[in-house]
Image (cartoon, rainbow, N blue to C red; front, side, top):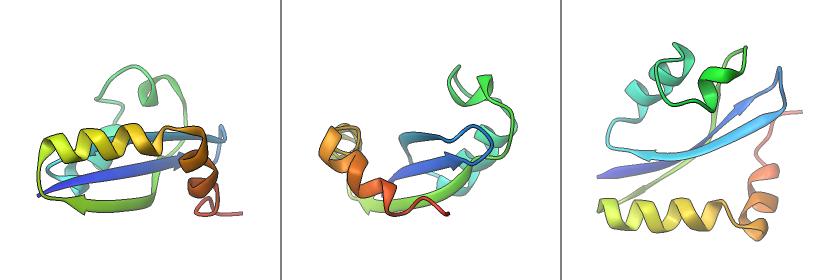
Length: 82
C-alpha cells in the first residue's frame, strides 16, 4: 500500500504533496530536513494535514498529480488549520 499525503508548514504557510510506502517515516524525514530541496529549505515543522491510501505506486503518482491541480489545491485548503 502507498500513501498520498499533504504536509503543511504554518510558519511559512506552505503545503507539500507527496507519496510514500511509509508515511510516518516520511513525515519524520521531512521534519529532519533530510529529503529534497522544497521542505528542507523552509524552517518550522511540517504537519500532516491529509492522506489517503492507494494500492500501487502508479495510482499514488496519479493521485499526487491530481492533488497538485488547481481544483484539488482548493479542496486541500479546507484541511489547513486556522
